[in-house]
Length: 183
Image 1 (spheres, rainbow, N blue to C red):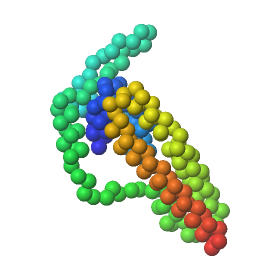
Image 2 (image 1 turned 90 degrees about the vertical axis):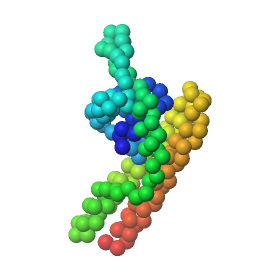
Image 3 (image 1 turned 90 degrees about the horizontal axis):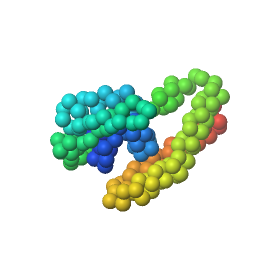
Image 4 (image 1 turned 135 degrees about the vertical axis):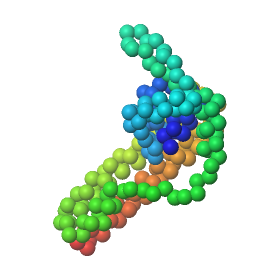
């Protein structure tokens, strides 16, 4: 799937591997991430397949940077992938849920500490969705007004993240209350 994420970003404009990573972190990072090394490995493979091309761009007092651009073949591959309907549910791996499932014999405070730590992390993530993500979307559409329709869908994914965090926090609050009352 990383191939299609990279093709999607390159559909908007040519970018370096570093810029792709930064853009991904600010936009799809709440539901799709990649390590820098994965991005560069995938870009090399995509270039060999003819889905993208690259060229060096000179920089003053720094090494040249490599800029990647989507090809017609890449645009076709991206469109074909986008047209394929999603017909299965994604499987998820939740480390906390696995640990919690087997924690019945642990001390109450150990369980509560883990739950409260995650509550704090999800609270911070929820705040990011309310502040940083909308600013990023607004910043991009100010620079590229032709992406307003795309921005509506970006906002839909941001809203998913916001609602997911609310749900997760609600569940954590309920579970903390249950452990406090019944353990």
